[in-house]
Length: 154
Length: 154
Length: 83
Length: 83
Image 1 (spheres, each protein chain N blue to C red):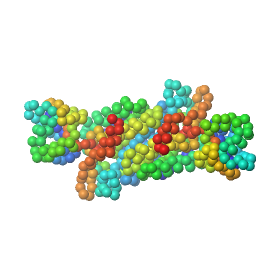
Image 2 (image 1 turned 90 degrees about the horizontal axis):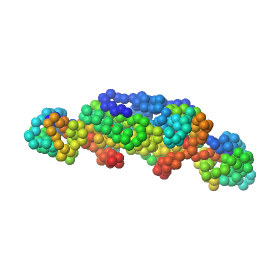
Image 3 (image 1 turned 120 degrees about the vertical axis):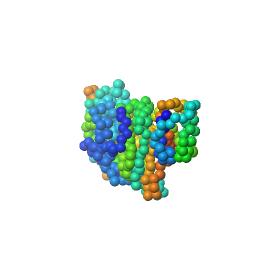
């Protein structure tokens, strides 16, 4: 189990390799990586081009909330392991923002827990994105679809 | 888009790296890796210890079915990319069996498509496992839970 | 007609692949199965419980009613257990 | 009491972090907000629409009714948008 908040990039392959190494009770690993897109909002034709974004966070509370989310995942599913990595600072399109992963004897638990981790993280971990476009900077609004996704787990 | 059926192991990190490289329209990548467990059946306390398993398959039909499953995923979700790798031959506990991955602008599509790929693969791709235990060899029975998981997508 | 067997159907028939010439009028998978059962006690054992046997004609899933004709590739196997 | 502001609340107040001494009797987040609004026009602007302001007391999510006392760390920020 681990939670990391960092400015630097991470290597999903290396994280994944460490995840299952030497364990013969793991049946499946589910991993999700979130990346910076190059347009604002939901629709690539409607949104302005994003040159970069900056992720602000609340040091201390971020780690505390991520650890609580991971503990909740472990309480709900029989996980062999779980991992959350979230970056902060300035990020350009194509860069990795976040990685969540869960492993279990059975794929159901791995998938569900992985989905839970990202859904709760999106609505509970204190990060805020500001997008840098040619029209200026704009704080990203919270999305109702993210709220709805998180509510499924309540 | 790619489907590979092979005896050799694969490197999930390398596959993942190739998946998102250079794309700035991908918001999320979901990846699942299935591994060989060291016990038979669902419950580690009830099942005999598995020393190894051998995956038999139907060359030709396997590729054909995997390609059809991947095409179906692409028809159902707006994917940026999809990947299926499945091994055959003899495998020991802890070894990787299968990798499925999907990327999309939005995480919903990536998660759903990834789950769909493994659920349909489990009930439609012509692979058969025989487990080698100290009590002898035993063909693995199809599981009703896998049938139920696949039916969700019909 | 080319017939393939996989997993425990291969173990029971003792054969992975065989070329067969079913009698004239054998035009469905079901008819082919009736013919194959007569080839050996192993074949009969393989097809003893048809509810646990799956079939593919030319590499697509098929049923007992599916038509077959000379030149087809017909495969018999248990429910799949990959992934 | 330590008060933190993030994202556009930081931009509006012009402050990331400040130490404040609210008047005696300020014993909830709601009371603290009323006090903070009087500190500058930027503060007033930050707290203009409370429905889009989230709060944490000592790094746990809280509400306007949550008790606060001297020594607490209270943070105000918009709904989160990480991940």
